Image (tube, rainbow over all chains, first blue to last red; front, side, top):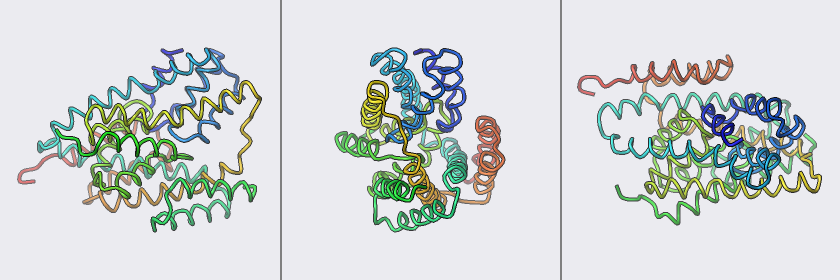
Length: 167
Length: 180
């Protein structure tokens, strides 16, 4: 199981959404650690919980091998790639002032912006499906641009509004 | 390299970000925490780390926490920052998992999630608009960002494939030139 989550973490590029189909294939269809229903519920719980969605590894790992399984699956999902990121970031910091490194950073910036903008589109496609959710999104954008409220209060408030309105 | 921010402050702010980043689009919470509310990073520095975290393998929110932590306080900043980011959500999810398997609790919160999801769209839209205003300079950068948006967003082209094509292209377009 640990190796499976390690491998899943390595193919997780550009955000967690892309790896979900493969995650489901491995943990439901191949190894039967959770049922399809449990996987869906676990994924829903991970979305409701703060922090990365890939913490769903806790749910699957616990079902497969208890608390130790939850720990190992999560460590495999997060630790190796975190070390890789730390090493690359640290070394990059020592090179940052060189002209070619600055050019790299200028070249990579629009990649990050483009991916984030595509993420807005994907979230909007799945999150806005009627006038009520569209209005909530517009209202949230307007309030956030003023900086009056921290984002989590707004998102939490929108969750309560959604629950009251039965969205 | 000296630490820009005390380790205890990083743990505090990253832990709070980890605890409050609800509903998707989680890098926007980080932007609010370290660029908008605290003068820890410039927008372009955040985007550098965001881009790196998206290009490297692994959950990008965690990668972003590591990259920002390393930038702000070296190795220890990366390690403690990532831990502070993960632990709150991990403890909550483990608790919910125990409830699910031992008490029979099942998530039936579709309406609340729809409300949260809609607000997150507004949050990520606002954050992305701020980043674009602060960091995109020049026609080449606009073309690259727009191409990636169209390919990955509306056209649903595989993200890995788009990154594989667009990264070398963008690096070539932004290569150092004489006098620049």
